[in-house]
Length: 303
Ligand code: NAD
Image (cartoon, rainbow, N blue to C red; front, side, top):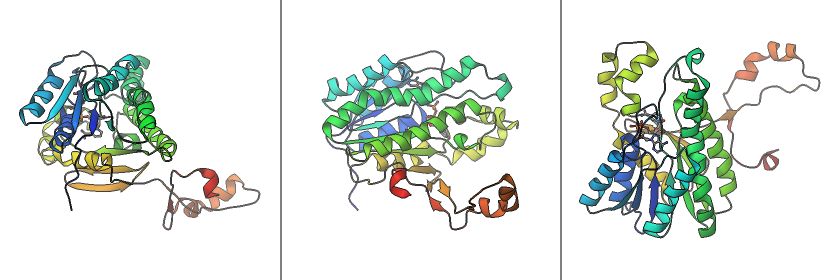
């Protein structure tokens, strides 16, 4: 198969100064894309800022012969998000792909997470994705073409303890991905997501130790195989013009890639349904053998 190339394509990667975003940006650039390397450069919990991470990745891309520009704006700020999109348009004259990757981590039990900490989490993950796309969407609609790759997490499925704010923000990203995908379907724009597994700052052994109440050494070896470079191929695939997926989530890490799907089974139907009907038929209500995948197709088309 021919290499999936991005020559003459402009790609924004948010949070591209470190970890997964850096790895995505390097792979896009190696495939010929002009890349806006956006990163606020803050601490893992979202506080602070520095131009250094974005500058370092731009320098890496330029020294390898690629094309990139740095952006230090916060995706959590609507004006900042608009200026990330402006950087693409003013520097490269267009915009084809947005990879919403910027993220923070703030691990704690629900009773200890203040409203302020919840707000910061939702502002970066959910509203960060929304703000960047609010600015990018009209450009893509006008062009009749666009590829969006958002970043979900298995934390949004309840699989990570002490992650109520993070999981909720990511749950919002999942709903946004699917609903926007159905809007983009007739506009030439696809919206998908990856759910990564990788050894990065946000999944450092010290953070995992806090999450799972185990010594940090427990995780040092496990994480080594989870290289960010083994996640980026899924982001790049979903961003390519040849990709026909829309509204999908690919779980990716350690060399594995698989589909994450929401399914619905036949359940039971009773003309005058009672709570006792549910109790008496719980096994049938819960059995997903033979269940179908819930698509993003308009509900009216599926009934
Ligand atoms: P990371 O901390 O290494 O990188 C995240 C980057 O985002 C940082 O460089 C940070 O400065 C930047 N950033 C944070 N807030 C920003 C803002 N408001 N505006 C612009 N940039 C901002 O973490 P990572 O693991 O590479 O995370 C990347 C994405 O992947 C996140 O959305 C994260 O939730 C998600 N994720 C990671 C894993 C994993 O296993 N590492 C698992 C599931 C989801």
